[in-house]
Image 1 (cartoon, one colour):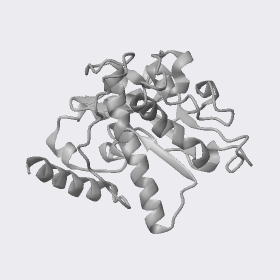
Image 2 (spheres, helix red, strand yellow):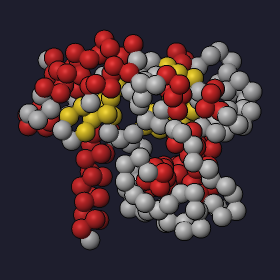
Image 3 (cartoon, helix red, strand yellow):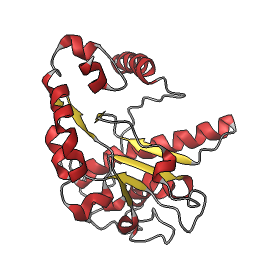
Length: 243
């Protein structure tokens, strides 16, 4: 009853702020697969099982969207997955600006897109940014489902630990269907993770393009604990600050 009451409060807030077409709030958890010896059921930061617990919910979201499509006789061409705790420091790029001409519906040329930096400062790992993903429909499903499906079948299908662990998500997100993390397309957009204590502006030093947004992020951070500022919702918080 307590969880249902809290979920109701969050539904009201999210609908007011984001005006989503549909919204689901769930408390389902990934069951431990004791037969999967390569992934111990230990929770905690940087633990493989904790990562899978998070993406179990992403898989559920994917399945709910497919159900919604079927119910409403609708079919999306593109999917955008984002973490819910991101602070956007500029508008998200328009789709035509990201996609190469003729590649949108071409199964052999299609690409998935992730932002450059923020998740890591290691350039070799830019391509497995799991904060944000923009993908054409034909390449989306492996990202949303593969890691969890393989974990659930781990006694039958090997689930070998990899580094970084995000490679589990990008293994089949390209037309050739293997080692796809190397083919992820990077794009520039300024954002960072916003914790309860404030935005993590240091993450903007992970890629050169992002440096110019450090002052903007610091301006937001300086007002983060101000009750008047927190109560003032705005789709572009830096604009709200400057007004």
